[in-house]
Amino acid sequence: MTSLSDTSTWLPLDGLAPGFDANKGALSQELTGRTVLLTDDDGYTEYRFAADTVEWEHRTQDQTHTGTDRYEAFDIADGLVYSQFHRADEPATAVSLMLDFTTGHALTVHTTIGDPEPGRTRVRQRFTPGRIAGTPAHGPAPAATNTLTGRRALWVYSPEHAYEHVYLSPDWYSWQCLAGPERGLADTDENTIYQLRPGIYVFAWREKVIPCAAVTVADHRDLRGLRSHGALFGLDETGRTPVHFTFGAYGRLLGAVVYPADLDPTR
Image (tube, rainbow, N blue to C red; front, top):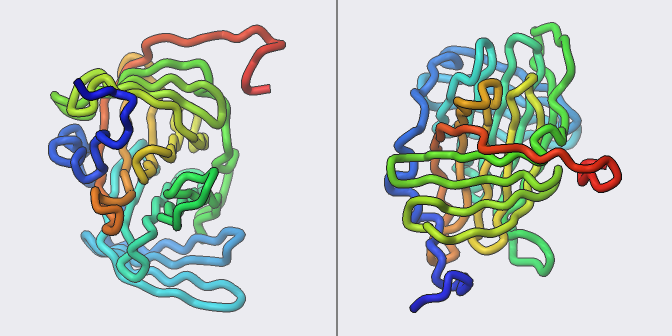
């Protein structure tokens, strides 16, 4: 009998993909024909969106990078769009854009496959809040939050794939597979959580066993009807070829923990 703790037998990222995206949301056309200029601490980036491709130009004080990539976009709420693409010029990098045309705020997440390094996950992420030029900014900018700490949620990705998440702290969460090819597997991995709007969060995680990471936009406004849209990015079974695909999930809150003040992991 194979031990579940034998991580050498765990499913590679490309083995998970077939059918995992059954609950992916309808693609948005909100960005089609739009030019979006983002400014942030890295400089500025102009995105010119067609129906399914985006031309982008990133400028800093010292250099300019350009590219054209296929993208997907999802409507999260009125005026709030999540876009995702895999860079052709740098196959080890994927880009997630959270664009709030109502508040003028944005969040960019760069997910990068790095070289193996002791004490670090193979796939890493960088979070950069920004502004949408030409849209007056109001309300709070995207910021790290501990709001999810203590919650326990069920996420269903397809009729065959279901996972439980337990949000332990602002930096860690535990997951277990309740249905699907990974049924019985569980682990605790790094996470980062940003609030985009009240009840709407970027929940991103980085796995240590399988070289992959995810960026999801999770809508917790209705705790009986959670909804998420996301992308997974990492390496295939050979450990050499990048794998990138989008997905979605329906969920519900299973419970929540209130910690004593002196033992609260958010303090």
